[in-house]
Amino acid sequence: MENVVENIPTSLYGNLSKKLVNLVLGTKDKNAVPADLSKKIIYLWRQDQLASPTGIKTLLEAAVMVDAEATHSTLGELGLQEVVTTLRSI
Image (cartoon, rainbow, N blue to C red; front, side, top):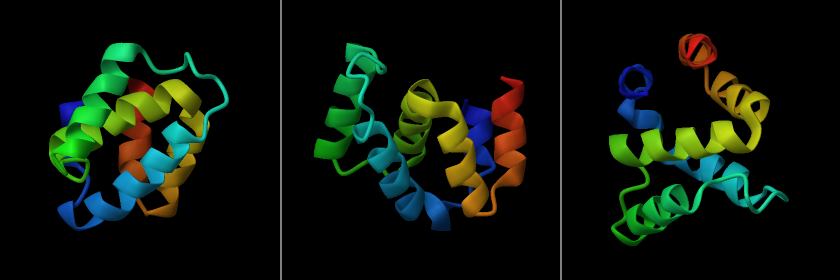
């Protein structure tokens, strides 16, 4: 997943993190994200690190678990087609 984050411009981290948080928090399936990943997201949020490389990586992992197609669509809206292609190959 690190190579995916490397292909995302840092200028998009803030906007992308907000969109991914909304996607993850909007799920109706409360078991979609494992507890340890949820705890990591909460920790990063408390440290104001969701818009960091580690935060984006963690949010992407959770968002793909919640709804992979919506995650791909969100990335596509931001012009990150190469990232979508890489994610689909993982």
